[in-house]
Image (cartoon, rainbow, N blue to C red):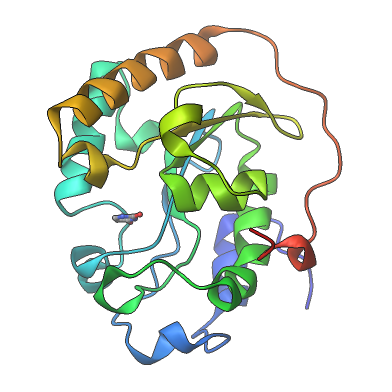
Length: 203
Ligand code: URA
């Protein structure tokens, strides 16, 4: 298949996907939404119930918080891009399994290549693990700036976790203040080859 040159082409290549078992329970594929040329790219874990019903990422309770956090750093949804590690809802909102992550990974990797963000913000432990290709302790790593190939990776707590405790909420608010600072800085790390899909599932 020809390599997609735009996000619309990539979405077309994904088609009515049956590459992993998640297609059996989904209502809609949640490919991603926002600005194809965004400096800030968010990668979440996978669609929840509301996202599955609407086909749009982060539109449930966690999404409402994300909107508010964006507003707190003078951004809106239309100025960033938001996607997930897996594009279909895992049943009962369980974590995606390695096969599901691997099957979706080439689409995530191409989304990153096409968007060319300055900062990739991984929302939660699962997304951070996939992007950094290792197990992460999100409560330790959150808010830090890690060099990626041509962009900075900033893991933060998942907004759903922030909704569960005041301490987590304070943490994510501070992480977003840091995100603003990283976006305002000029430098980006040098570009090195993107990770191969086969490298996934090692965490
Ligand atoms: N949680 C996620 O990780 N992604 C969504 O799109 C919604 C909730």
